[in-house]
Image (cartoon, rainbow, N blue to C red):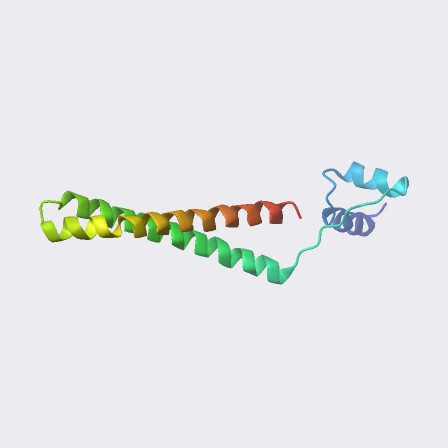
Length: 115
């Protein structure tokens, strides 16, 4: 096999799910099915956007938690204490929803990695 043929063979091999070149060649010789990876550009872009959004949500959630924690240290001011009590359920709902989004995004990412 010359260098050009090897490069072509290697290019075909890297587009598959085979972990080793010998695996790929064995499947070809024995006429077994070879699974070819397919990348959907729009799905890749969507995933990149979702990863960015996940990181932004994490940062927002961290900032929110820090602000609420700071407000808890000012509980000697009656208005702040009343506000904290009134908004605690909103905070918990927000954090829960952000966690759900992050979990779902992680599931999508794991599925995407298996493609």
